[in-house]
Image 1 (cartoon, rainbow, N blue to C red):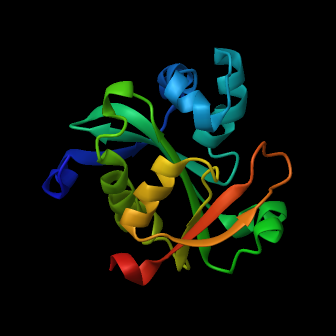
Image 2 (spheres, rainbow, N blue to C red):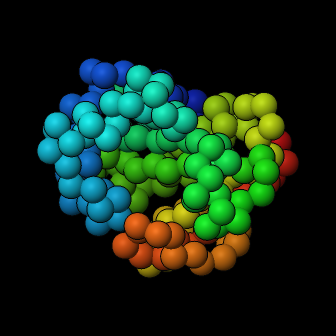
Length: 179
């Protein structure tokens, strides 16, 4: 995809009816490689239902291309997760994002950077008090790291977060880089 195609990308908050497609994506081999979360449909409902219903402070969205769902993206204020914030020593005003493209035909086609730029500009950085964004791919996920670098994220540090199978390669992007 080309930068001029950014207008084809949009986002919509997830609803309960979207959990079926999320479940399918979570079990795709290319997602499992890095997300490492094989869930039954019931497991997907248990884990992501509270996000969809607003019971936790993580905000889930579908990534749409020409109004068709093709992936998942979420954002959260890192300070709302005090244990994680302490482990990574996040600054006040830091938001975090996580994402994957669920539809295999769109993986490794240059879409990730366009998605992230638009999501940060339209959803994350307009939030009151958000000054930077942190993302923590697996340190071995070279494709994701290259994508994030193209957006403007820079290496911060590598941290082994309790409960995670591999160290996070933390990267940071200041709000003013995109505006």
